[in-house]
Image (tube, rainbow over all chains, first blue to last red):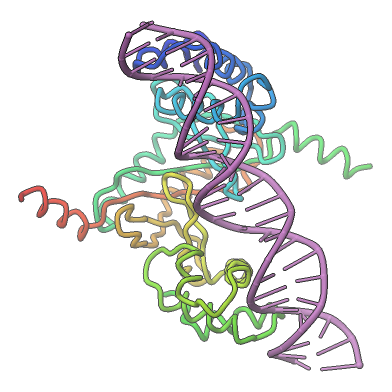
Length: 146
Length: 146
DNA sequence: GTTGCTGCAAATCCTTTGCAAGGTT
DNA sequence: AACCTTGCAAAGGATTTGCAGCAAC
């Protein structure tokens, strides 16, 4: 389950940050987004808030664990609402930006086993899976059929 | 095994691109680098070549499969010489940028198995492991001891 | 009343692009 | 000779920062 706007606001407050109007607006916009979104999209959703504040608030939300920052295949940054309190990874549809979170114990285990093969101490990892989601796949099939 | 400068040049030629002086210089600089490097570093290594050409050549090298582009935890792009012809992943030391390539059939298998869990067709994936390499680990221990 | 937060605009950083001149085949 | 490449400088896009004013505690 992902946080709603109110819960995100609370998470920010718990870190000792103030609850301000602009932050509320950004957080609500984030809460209403489904799938992946860019900082720029949020900035457009909330035109009354300065871009800088949008970026600053997104950073707080990451710090609070309410959103995850991930990367498209070309490296473009994308945000998505986080699964609360769970380590997880993301499957991103490269066509519509829909994001599906998943947990994969197999992957975690495999990475842990890597410690034998890689020299050094593993401090983190990034796993992202790129997909064409079923809806986009169907759309593509339809249009190629004519 | 990774390509040396000459082999990279050849790989570029095989794609039908011309063998020019600036390209040779960039390719040699890349060939001499160990571990991960940024475009900016290469540009500094080869000051006689314009930045634009450095970026253009790095793109060719990616196209030729001679270098891989990967991302640090903060999303900053990094390049590294590619293992020839093999699908692989990278373990990056976040302190010294040393890069170790590894293959992990377990991870590949785990990702393939994901197809059941994620809705849609998997088109690609990105796996990066962040480490503190043994050398940096030792250095940290030394300095914390006094 | 302190101190943190905001918006704005400017600054940065990284990368790409337009274009005329020059190099490669 | 044809056309691919280059360098420069400018453009571009994304994100950060300096700072004076305002808001939250």
